[in-house]
Amino acid sequence: MFVRLSDGNMITVSRGELLPANADVLDGVDDLVELSYLNEPSVVHNLQCRYDRDIIYSKAGPVLLAFNPFKDVNIYGDDFVAAYKEKLLDNPHVYAVADAAYSDMMKDGGNQAIIISGESGSGKTETAKFAVQYLASVGSQNYEMKSKLIQSSCILEAFGNAKTSRNWNSSRFVSSFTSDLLL
Image (tube, rainbow, N blue to C red; front, side, top):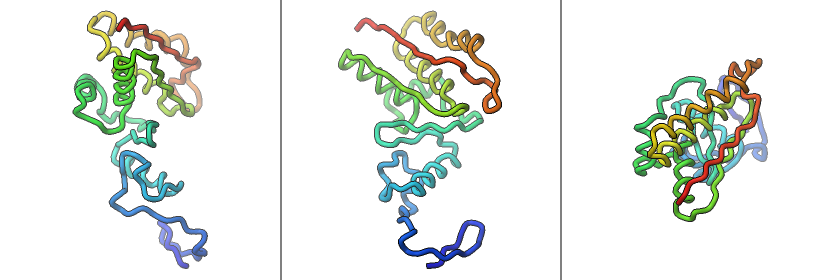
């Protein structure tokens, strides 16, 4: 079978080497589990379609995937916090994850955890800040407490971050935030 590559070159491959592709209508779906064919090329293609449109969050079932856009994509702030809190937006976002944790905690009274992992420069620190921003906004009516919680990350960064070859503001510590709420 002949296959034309993106650079225009033609190569010959056996039918057994080919992986099935998803229909174009599935390009850029929010949740990877919606793909008909869940293979590596299909996943990468879907994530690339979203990233090319500055959609940096995707889901893989209950897991949020985030890609550092290395630019401002204007998807954070009080208006977005309010929209996720009021359930006006339901697309994949760190605010949606934080909202689900907060809602489950308020419903069940049980402990919740949000785990953020990735390689150096992937945006873990910024993602954690946005999660804390959301939780502080929905969980605290006290402006002073909310402000202190959000600003605490600046103090930690001042003492615990350093420039590395891959990241100009690399965290050199592990962050663990605990908040006790009286329900």
